[in-house]
Length: 333
Image 1 (cartoon, rainbow, N blue to C red):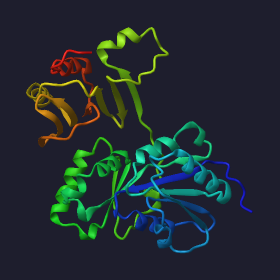
Image 2 (image 1 turned 180 degrees about the vertical axis):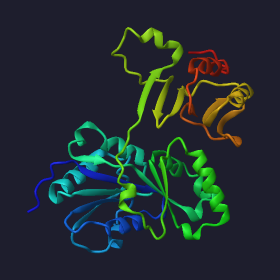
Image 3 (image 1 turned 60 degrees about the vertical axis):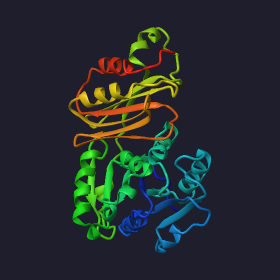
């Protein structure tokens, strides 16, 4: 009988959009299992019929479990916690792989698994997102919100199907690296899913996040440490790998002057990325700026006004916030 491990189990999340090549990568990683170790896999399928498990080769030394129906990232945490607890207790693995559905949000899963009560059981490794290199030039594919969410969550991005990449895909990859340089630490290329385990066996490094009320009203809360910031408006600052992301959320009913807002965003300097959606006097507008392109377009009504800016240096956020609020048209609180 295998002795209970004295160390938390090394745990890898292998995420990626539909058809990106997650299972192919997983098969290649499982083939590298040392003979004396036991590895385990927890797979999540969005439907009720498990298929991916059937694609993995039968082998002694690793155990595969499926969690069917819905997404373990964003549905109730209870089924995932039960499945994971049973897998760890029954199999006692030396290493664990978790493959969420291609329709999942890995950042939410990562948030669950880095909560304090899991720290004695699992040791998170860097989150991996697999991207299909042969579809990088397909705007219909890369414009999916889930696609962007999965890339933002990644510490390691594995480019699959590199042998099928065109010149347009290569160019798109160059732009993708620039666009997500504030999020991804490492970019790897996989041919037929082949990646050395050592390249992915890096400890997860968390981020620090500070969520506060708007800068202009913080002083009124300094003497009320127990106040919970749950309602809009608020701002946050998140720092990771020498980059900072500042964001604001405002109530849906607030309306902003479109041209004033556009001028303000265009006047900013030395940023890496600006994304926003605002209720303006010209309707709801989304802004998607990178250093090479300033894009804005009308969109459907959103649940709130919001903006995020990525910088690699310190900023006078209070001054920016004052300018942003000056673009507001309505005067109601």
